[in-house]
Image 1 (cartoon, rainbow, N blue to C red):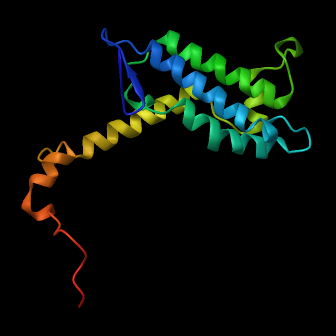
Image 2 (image 1 turned 90 degrees about the vertical axis):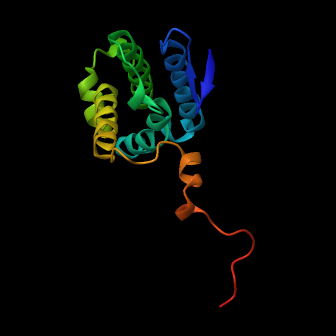
Length: 155
């Protein structure tokens, strides 16, 4: 098991540890923003916006490259809904549907966002030219990309 660009890579190719790490990081971000997210005086739309800008990117970091399974999607969905219920001030005993709470906050489901991230990445890689440099070090070997050393010349 190792780390690469913030993602945990397991020898068998699974992403269970990476999913666990992303959920932990998401909860840490949620706790850092809990002053806003748990304040009853702040409107739900603003709380939803803070959630979308702070917590969700931490949860979905690197999701475009995950070989995802249903169990992974379910774990992410459960973590997200626990956060959303807490933001709205409801528990599971209140019997309020997930879609209703997402609608109050104007937050799309995390499953849809994971699909969107994968499709965006697919489009990005699909449009990439075949002869494009793969690595940055290959790009630096090309004489066109070399910079001169030292301070720029005065003109």
